Length: 263
Ligand code: HEC
Image 1 (tube, rainbow, N blue to C red):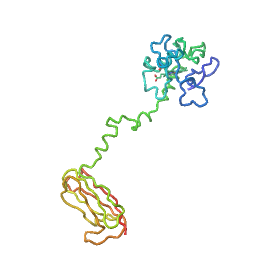
Image 2 (cartoon, rainbow, N blue to C red):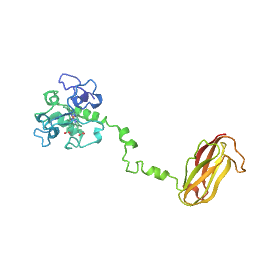
Image 3 (cartoon, protein in one colour):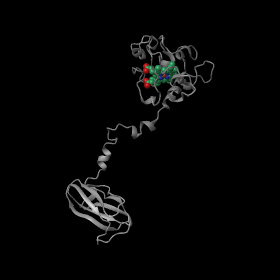
Image 4 (cartoon, rainbow, N blue to C red):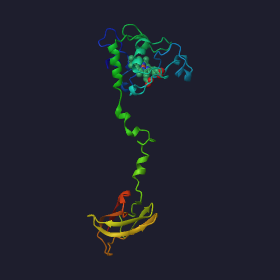
């Protein structure tokens, strides 16, 4: 970590490699950042003018946006043209192979550990720096299904379809709460044996609204707050339940809606 976050300085222990001076998007506060694009010395004579191609300014020629290093171990190849396959190659570039382009960032050109422009890291320092870059890997982010491709089986598309009841859908009743009479719509998707009834708060079936073969389509049902004998029930919470009477009811679980009867 010190290699990433400290200045290159031959007399310092441990020494640094200046990386944070540019790649510090997460710790920007208090750090004087250069412009968010610069040259990191890939080529002396770049074939791609980078930002300069857009602005036409000579001082932007051969400069590129400073990328984030979050999840950097997962996003090879590296640089705007993908020239480096590994982080080891990236570190080797900064260590020994900076090219003297006119716009090479002064941080890279003038600062070094032994000689300006060279980090001259030891083999173990390079290994440690690559290992540190791996610590930017955040698998909590990369495996979060919220950020998954919505068009794959992991995405949202399949689930609601699979969860949809296949035989019928019981809608909310209206009005609710009610006093007098309330109505609800049962949408039947294919002709089926169904019972729709009212249960009291203890789960007793106090009134059957509909029972038998219902054809596909919308069925309007009504409840006037009475039981099977036509006696007015007391006010309170009831449940309207639609139940499949098919011999294999596994296709559709019972559906229940809360109904409030006011007195
Ligand atoms: C002067 C600013 C500067 C410094 C200092 C610097 N970089 Fe960079 N870095 C850049 C720029 C600009 C790019 C993008 C270059 C490109 O796209 O061609 C880059 C690209 C990278 C990339 C590739 C990112 C990708 O997604 O392709 C890695 C990895 C990286 N730098 C690591 C480091 C490390 C490690 C250090 C320290 C040894 C360091 N950098 C020091 C400016 C800097």
